[in-house]
Length: 321
Image (cartoon, one colour):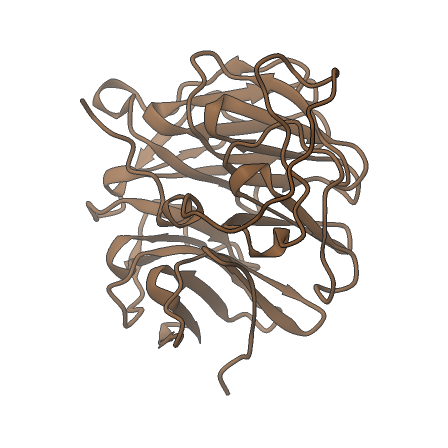
């Protein structure tokens, strides 16, 4: 049987971390669900994804952990209420208050107060592993995951309907990440070098010819419209025409790259397994391996500092001159 080739970020997040102090489930908990524990060391839980919510940062990870910072990443607090304790793998906010998170068991969570409290909005049929979520606005959102799982909502998440991304032999490919380009096009990064694009809000998808066979774990849109995909063996692909043609950027590493962003000065800042940090302008990228060699899943910029997220939670990283 085919097994999910989940991202290195997810693999890192499933490592056991010493976060304790359980709470007693309240009567309002969804049937069959156990709420996330309140933990003194929540910032050290395995963290998988991060999103900007106005001026705040919201990070999600294992055991239903959601933490937030409203002061540029200097201090973090755990969400007061998360109704599930499963691994959360993706998060998306449209403004300072309204956001969504997805995870294992097909769960889709929503918040209307900046991530302080969450409610279980939907559980996808057959409870697939959901790996990515993106909302274009207050009503239109998308979620993707293992075995080609894909959902769309047009009412802010009140109802979700299946969405077909890959067809034929591509139908059950794992979809690891979802993001939007500057022109509104949607991109999904998947296993086996697969990437898909939709130019009509998810109604129709086209498989892109990336020229690679290794799984793609993540991607991002650059300020000038270029699209970047990240994957196995240090793969960095860039397209200047919306995904029709791709070129390889040499990253200088064979480690899987799992997350990244573009800095305000136009540089790429990428992270991956084994403590890998890749950065650079244009086609010139350089790699640094952190001494701790911790698997990294995502990166954020806040208050003039770089914040890395991975198997041991938050790490404040000093940029390399």
